[in-house]
Image (cartoon, rainbow, N blue to C red; front, side, top):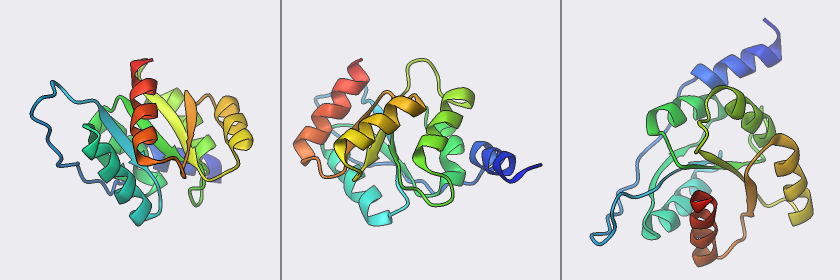
Length: 151
């Protein structure tokens, strides 16, 4: 098995480092679920906190090797996927997920500090449903995630 195939298999069957969000909002019905994929623990947790406060149920994954396992376990409405993951970039992860794990309703959104035009290009080429810049203000991040989920 070649290195790329091993990487693909590890992504699909790999181990996960996840934790579920704990924010509860009494007035909401069923909450939409988001998986945040980012190799930086601080960023993953900060984004999860913002989304939890916005009413989402959130799980995080910090290793590319656990992404598919996390998605299968969590069955999210949206995956917020960092582009600059080590070993395997987010665009490659997106392509693998779209072929092997994603259901027709799940959205994959690239999440990066890349320049906006470059991030939009990357998202388009890899088949992501869109992109969000990492420097997006919290309220706007919540709003954009809601819009992607709504379709």
